[in-house]
Image 1 (tube, helix red, strand yellow):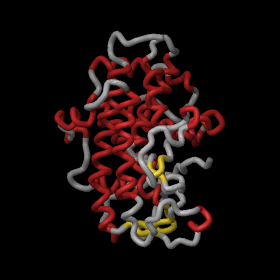
Image 2 (spheres, one colour; image 1 turned 180 degrees about the vertical axis):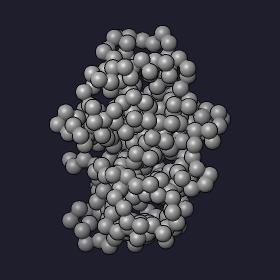
Image 3 (cartoon, one colour; image 1 turned 180 degrees about the horizontal axis):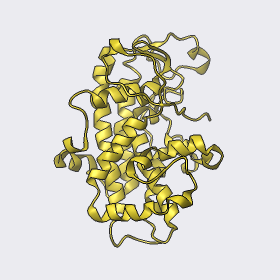
Length: 304
């Protein structure tokens, strides 16, 4: 199977009519770093101290072009190492997403051979991070994967799919930006617009009541992740695909017919409908990263 495309990200908060063509990167650096800042604000003092101790093992990762000295750097580290150290980290490529079809009922077990998908890896990486018997650099790597994958899972097209690699094969335009695809748009321009328009999302704007709502649910991480994933998948099913102007909403579209389809258009109405979900999912992702890291690194944690 082909893997999702990682592209450079742009920063955009301009009205649609003013958008200029620039290069783009994945749920991108802006959104990922924001989830990291949200999570950092919600870590307990004891866990912050434990994370600082793990950062001392960074040299043992041997990824000098991809630093891991803060939770913000952790939020983008897995994308960086995939690009800079491709041979060493090719194994992690399918861990960033899960192609769950929106053409039927939600199935958390779909398209995840041998646990090589984002939902399973969140639980696995949390367990490695929590295991005090492991080497510090192994736990630090797991920290980077965990922080990043929770962010990835909350991008709707990292879960929803119409047999088109989560929108990577859906040609779409965004204002003056043409020759893009739907996945790129959600990774970069659409996300950054939603997150930076006033009132911009910041860690300080997320209330304790919201955090409690975002993190409520089963105690078991896998069960929690299944609930979170269904919520994210629903956005891809109801907004990301069907609201795209000029693109047929059949399900799925056969691959041999896709090249002949017209380009879809992300309109101002599409942006209006998508923005609340983008903002909500980033706030949820940051809060849920904090929940999982706080649990994994709580004083008196477990060993295997």
